[in-house]
Image (cartoon, rainbow, N blue to C red):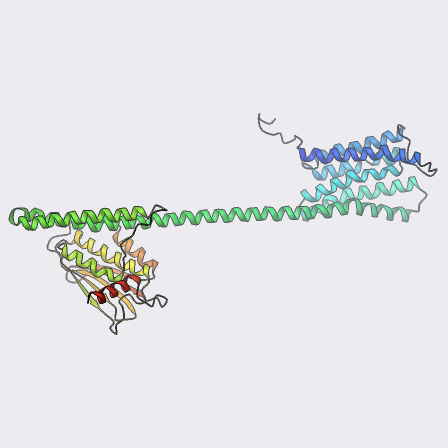
Length: 431
């Protein structure tokens, strides 16, 4: 028994009732009108039973019973088709005649539902019994009703079976094929939507990873600088108050810078935000290193230019330049944290077919105070993989550390970046 609120598996649905009711109405109308019309035409050869006679009631009962059997065409289509085609046997036994043709209406409906419900490879086996019943009963009715030879009656019976079952089956197969195609399109659309959802989630995950790296780079770089300056203030405040004031001013400037960078990063999360961002390019590396030197870091920039007036960023795309800038920034932040006081060098070698960037430091005057285990090197490696560059890092023979980034040039990025072009124009105008 079905639970409250749940449909019973044996409950009739509206799509089952409607065709059964229409079939009952049409068949009953035929049983009623055909004898009346035959009587009105005064056709002496008419074999229609009079309305109200026993044979007439047999025909009406059979066609209505067929309509009732159609109510199960959705749940048990093959069984319903067999019952519908077997019921006319009562007419052959009790009331053979021309009204036998009215039983074909319910048979056609049952055959249609078998074609729409049964798989194509099983359709022949499912309709074998109904076809034999239709042909056999039609043959028997023809032999009892008219003076026909067996060959003629058999031909008429086969034609009846083909028309009554074959045509509805063909229509049902076309409807089933169209329905399956529609279901396949819906399934494909759902699969594509799920794939799009997965891709969106993957993009969101990558964006979150990128944001976490940016936050780490910003915090690690600026906080390391602030800590370095704060340590200098502690030593200078008694011996050199003027230098301590300058260090405090630099700490204030560094604090403003980190707040601005964080605002820009958060601004990227807003769809309407178009806040300007510091352009991280190869020409900006020189400015960055100079800013580090002004803040008290012992860092030197060495550039091996290609010569012939070729800009430093020739063949290096925007994304690759961002990777270089972040690599230099992260490397200097690591030096400030793990090797405070050590001299460092940033080298840009543009003489070969590949651009090589090296950030190295000597032995620190004190042991490494850093805790380690951060995401700096991991973030650099992930960025290098995005542009097909090689990243190598490790200790040097003199007790220091070196990080080397080697990247191929992209022929499609043959010219200087817009930022580099503006710098060149500005330099010419100043000169």
